[in-house]
Amino acid sequence: MKSLLVAAFTICTCAFAYAQQIEPQKEVLPIQNSVDTTLSPIPEPLFILSEGGIKKELSTDELGKLNITQIASVEMVLDSESLKEYGEKGKNGVMIISLVEN
Image (cartoon, rainbow, N blue to C red; front, side, top):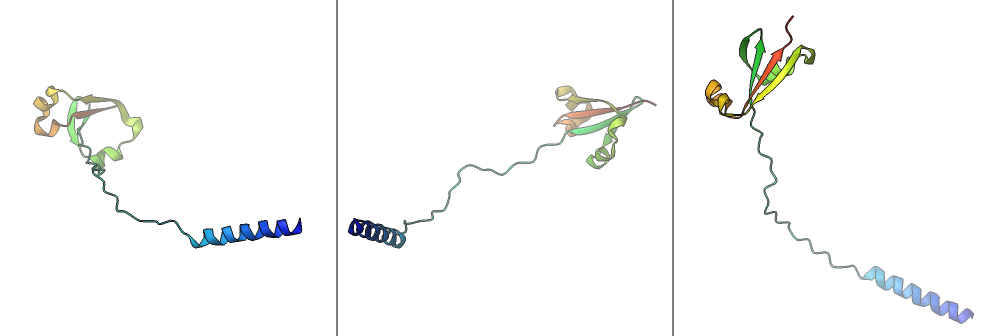
């Protein structure tokens, strides 16, 4: 029985040593990506601030400074009417932000 255990131990040790010596071939291949994953910028609409019947163009900086409690409604105009009324600036749509009247 003792010789059987020694033989089993020897076989396991040899198998382990052999496995340590053989490393799988790791060939690193460059990845070729045929799909363009860069994001194109989202076209910004024209921002219009409407207050007391007066409309004025609003920059993104001015938009960021607006307090949300000042906003009564937001209307998104995407049809050809926006292009007619606002010209080339309205080609990506017009966002009309109406303020709460005091």
